Length: 78
Image 1 (tube, rainbow, N blue to C red):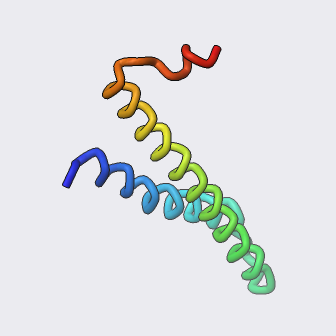
Image 2: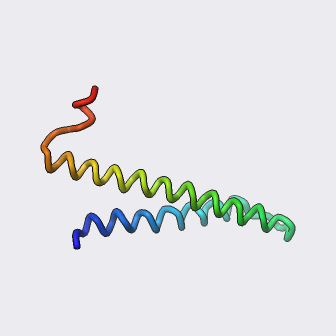
Image 3: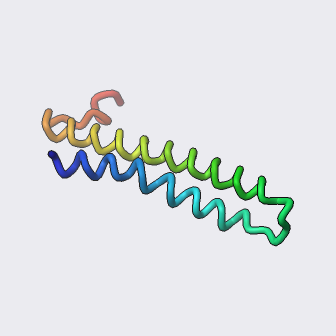
């Protein structure tokens, strides 16, 4: 299996976990009634992390494709 493909898929796991944890820490409150706020923040952080993971994985695939073709796609469309 290609090592770059493993890292691209690993990004889809690490980003949501890290962003959910960061959102959970930022929503830290002392009240028990705000547990739903903390859960919502962790869920939204995980969704943002998943979107970031997809974005970075797509960028890695695009750069690999550019290296194979030998053409910078970003310059072609400008």
